[in-house]
Image 1 (cartoon, rainbow, N blue to C red):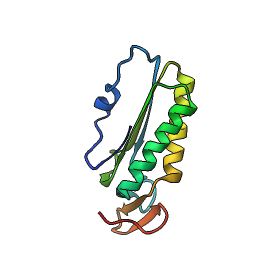
Image 2: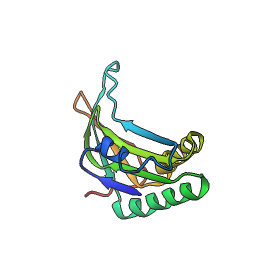
Image 3: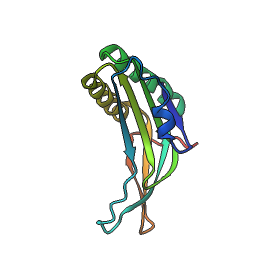
Image 4: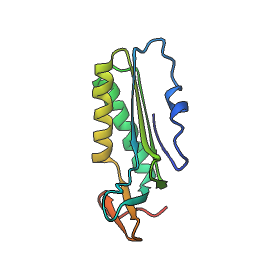
Length: 143
């Protein structure tokens, strides 16, 4: 399952959404917005804009590819859109599998493919008041 949402990700709810009876592993990846305060111009927040119809279709395609390619039981990916503050979760991926190695491989596949294939744009807002687009190709779709 691939989800786009503007609300904060409830990691505990996402993690507990599946039974552990036939899973020996739950591997989760949590992408957290960082603000590198050691730099002169550090990130204070982000804005993610997504081409929602294209992202939902391609996100589901990525999940299906991973489920066919790796012996795992289920995969959930939740991607935030809209404004996100430092310290908040921007993306969460959970992979439930009988064994950890398969879960690691599937999770890595999903995050790498999302980064390559989804039409998601990221704008960084810096502490000095400036901002810049740092991620995504083409023109952002304004929601």
